[in-house]
Length: 229
Image (tube, rainbow, N blue to C red; front, side):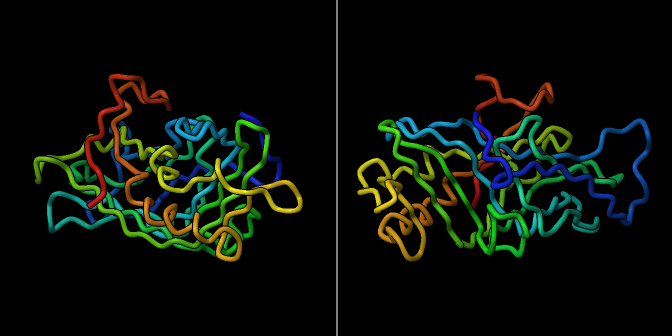
């Protein structure tokens, strides 16, 4: 995967927010979620993705016990093509979480890739034509454990981004390049492609368990434990 230099960026966070139940015992693994793309290609259109960033306005772990405090972070810009993946670890003694709440929205990041945007994706088509997608889509995603009330494997969660699903109805491969030889998709250019891209946002995310916590999902880990409601 090629780097886009200053355009894309790595971001790993350690949240040290307190919780009503006290500090995390040193022998207990903290709740943690990794965030990463599932793949760097869009197979149906033969698109190669060079980099992508998303702006998470809010990410919250919601305990199974209604008396326990929720915990998470806000204003979390994420490059979904770094390794190890961007991640969020939480300083809390609560271990049983039954849902994860994620809000995507345009941020105020100083990073060029997310300048007042929610999503930025750049890459190239099979014919070498570069493409660039910038969206300000807003979405609220709730990942609820199934069956309801069963705790999630909170120490090894993986929020996967599926670009095949995100581009399913946005035909970048068939778009005409602009005068600079690129396909630019945003509110002002190729807006007819941006609308289906935005509409597919919810289907592009699923929650998985990285059982061995190695930062990648193997075939036997690719069965989602929750999809957004």
